[in-house]
Amino acid sequence: MIPAKVEFKIDNQFIQEQLEKTIVGNIQSELWFVDVDRIAVLTNMSKRFLEDEIFSDPRMRVIERRKNRKRWWPAKEALDVMKTITSEW
Image (cartoon, rainbow, N blue to C red):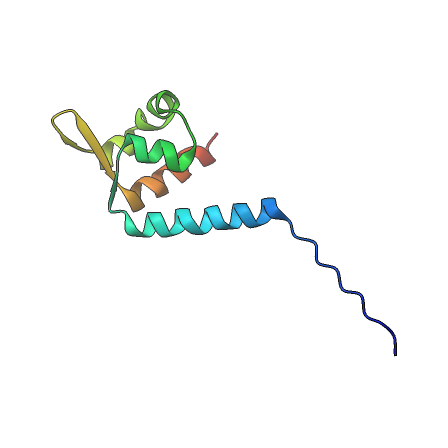
């Protein structure tokens, strides 16, 4: 009988990335509206960069909802528009 030797190599970075994708996917499916702070967290982009590059785009302004000085965007539409904008870079 030949002794079996089994080794497992675990890629911690890959596991972490997959967990983050799953968590973000679950969060996005639960959110109806997102604000500047939530988009900054989900995209890992600064608020200033988002203001300059994303929120100033007419496609984001069309879906923007305002009440006083607060702004929100429908989560699904904002994600789609941001994918379109960033794919043009």
